[in-house]
Image 1 (spheres, one colour):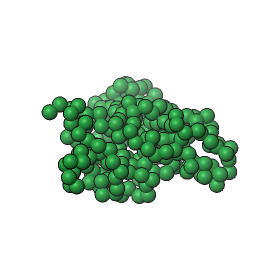
Image 2: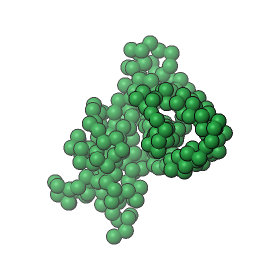
Image 3: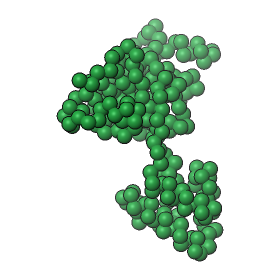
Image 4: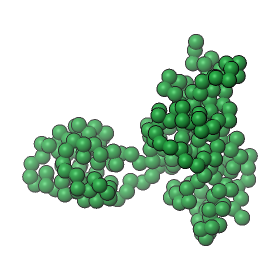
Length: 245
């Protein structure tokens, strides 16, 4: 059976917390869901009976109060208000996609994009947004019609990337912890002392990791913070007027 025919046999229906729990362990944030605004599930066709399998789920939540890239994407639409007014406007205008999960056997069918594309209009608000750490790797939000805004690299990250480059670790190598660790392990003084000071300075922003000793695990953690920058996505509902008063 081809992928197209499989996709046609799947329907998007209103879901519930049980649909999420059944797939939560497939998500990198396998955690308790917390409050949510809506859930939709992707299931087999109705003639499969009441026990039909849930193969995908999307969860919508209320928006976070302060998102820097939201201001960029909306031209400061929600800025300049007192906190109570701002929260009221956000709650009326915006919903946030907090989870999109597809059961692994169905991940080659483009179902994540379909879930996003077909459920955003059903939420019935002017703006839908999302944040995705892996957005640059798997841009299914963009495929669903959302516009991406990439976060700027924080100054501390820029400084460490430049320092690593000075000792022979280039940007394209930052996705390979083993290779970076090997290069760092071969450094001689004063380069080794220089980069150790730069790494320790970088880690001051990361709580319990600030006093970590040099080791492969520390290198892996540092690189994860250098390369994992969330992408902000936004979609404006063409059928709803955007009001801020």
